[in-house]
View 1 (cartoon, rainbow, N blue to C red):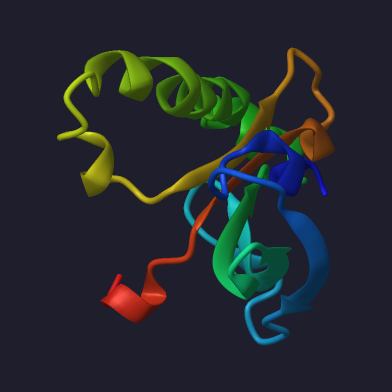
View 2: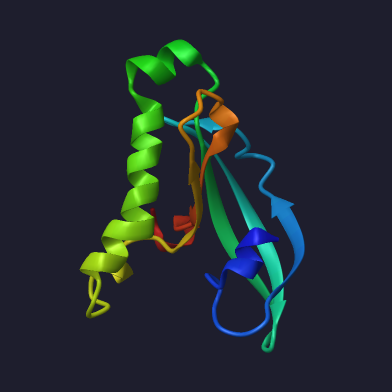
Amino acid sequence: HWIAASGRLGEGKVKFVDCLFDSGSSGEAQFASSVCFLVAVFEDDRGLVAQPMLVKYNLDDELTRNWLNLNEQFRNEVILYNKVLPFLDRDNAIIGIFPRYFFGSASESDNPSEYTIVLEDLRSSGF
């Protein structure tokens, strides 16, 4: 719901309709995070829109999180998408080489559930 309200899906009124999880990908461990893939379905003035997304979240293992400084890495990535890229992308040339950013949360807490990043799923583009 917060992604629909954020304006990151485009101009105008957007309503969240459904979320379809890729059950084969849930909790796939990467080097420094876990990910799952989903398709979020929204309704806007064009009708129903399906948006494939990657949800990246922090590892539960505290030892690994601390050893790899994962909390800091998540905070840096959220800052990159929220502040650095918009600042550098004054002529709309840079942002196109990154996946679309929908949401990011990285607190000062040690709770891994407070570290989440939602990006465009680029698997259909060969990534």
